[in-house]
Amino acid sequence: MLLDPENTLFVRGATPVLLLAGAPVHDALPLLTAPDGAVPLCEGWSIVPRLTLCVVDGPGDHGLVVPALAAPVVGGADDGTAPSGMGDWCADAERAGGAVVLSLDRLPEALDWSALLSSDTARGGFVPAPA
Image 1 (cartoon, rainbow, N blue to C red):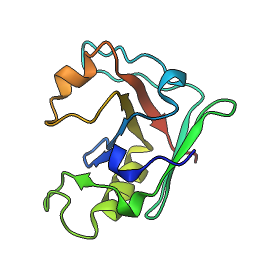
Image 2: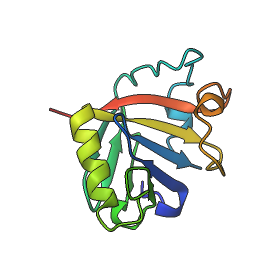
Image 3: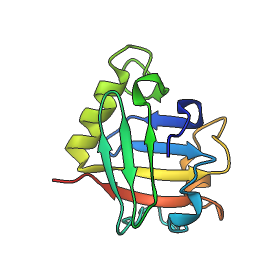
Image 4: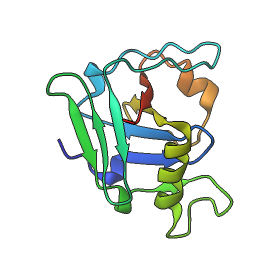
């Protein structure tokens, strides 16, 4: 399933994050429980981060494709405004061995990690990249 890049936000960091809004895989992802900030592993899921497309694959028929080159990227020294933003996010994901995928009803106006990680509606966790 193709997800509109306007419904995503790629966040750079030591452990990069992919925020999804209105994703068709929302109910298939595990309910996120990370009250202490430790994000659990998403068993049975994988992420393939590439400059042009980002694939999040789950068990069975669950999965989605994001046209990554058109998606917004925030974080890093240039705050994601340079064209290299998605390439840098992919490099972050490669170094981390995957990314945190969080599925929400809608994208937040501000990144408040404690609120996102303690939300009773957020789903997801750390999704490893295949070796």
